[in-house]
Amino acid sequence: MELLVVRHGQSVADIEGRFEGRADFALTDRGVEQSKRVADWINDHYKPDAILSSPLKRAKTTAETIGARCGVEVSIRDEIMEWNNGLLAGLKREEGIKKFPLPPGGRKPHDTFAETESLIQFRARAETFLSQLLDEHGRESGKRICLVSHGGFINMLFRSFLRLPLETEISITSGDTAVHLWQANGRDRRILFNNYQAHL
Image (cartoon, rainbow, N blue to C red; front, side, top):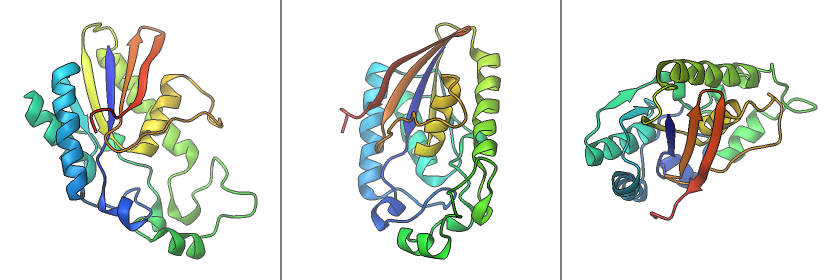
């Protein structure tokens, strides 16, 4: 099975410098154009058999654009929403940092500071989703599933996919409409490429 993992296009929060997370901002005009470009590229090079999307507008719009271009129906999955950033959602970054400064020593893995999802909860959500997905499709060698999600969740899913420890300094970048291609074959996990944006 192949996982074609796509981050949404540019959102209003991106250009306004806001903490996004679960705040439901729409795509900008540029984000809409980015979605069209990635949809064309995916249709030409890595057409999926199924598309799963976060319900948040910026991801859902991107996924629907890909689905329309590829002729594939989009299935909404709450499990692949962005990190729940609690009271930070939607705040300007400088306002959020001032209003909710990090506790002494920084955020701990169990911490739900500012009513956020803890690192442990976030990782468990990614692990559960991945386990269910692999159980359902992992033995289908020719199947390609497109996931349209968010930078934070994609990074957490990447760590889960590679069985990295909870606390790790290893991370990946996901730019606007960045595409990642991962392959799972039983216990074997392979990264074919990450953060592809040549379609832009």
